[in-house]
Structures are given as structure tokens and as C-alpha cells.
Length: 102
Image: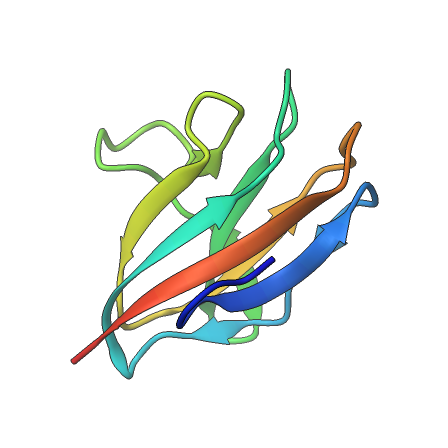
């Protein structure tokens, strides 16, 4: 359940879901969190390149930016439009954004 100024991008569900592009140009940064990932379940983080969503690479330059059971929250810079792709999950998992305004 979204709290305070959290934005609920995906209501808790076991189904695989892809968000609409989420614009962040009005934010300095966002923190994206998933509340119930286990095992190999993931949320891939993509950025819009024109009309195409492409995988974001982490700061190491080679690992895809992905939420996992071991890393269920990640801070992202504001600016791009992000797309989040949640895998099928064993339990209902939601996806939330906490924005930091400029």
C-alpha cells in the first residue's frame, strides 16, 4: 500500500505487469521499491528512448538495473521517463515510487 507521498505504480499482484512510462523531469530523484520479491523474481528498469523502452544499465556499466529479492529499492535520477517491468511473482507484489521534488 502506498504511503505518504508514495506513488503506486503497480497494485500488489502476482501477475507480470509493465508500467506506462513514468516521467520524472519534475523530480530531482525517485526511489523505486517493490514490496514482495522473492527468489529470482525481478523488476527490470527501463528508460524511454523516443518511443522505445530500453534496459537501464547500473552504475558499474554492465549490470542491468533491476530490483530483486536482495535489492528491493533503488534510487534513480530524475529526468527520464522510466518503465518498470515486473515478473510474475509467487505472492502479491506492488511497485511504488517515492519522489524528491526539485
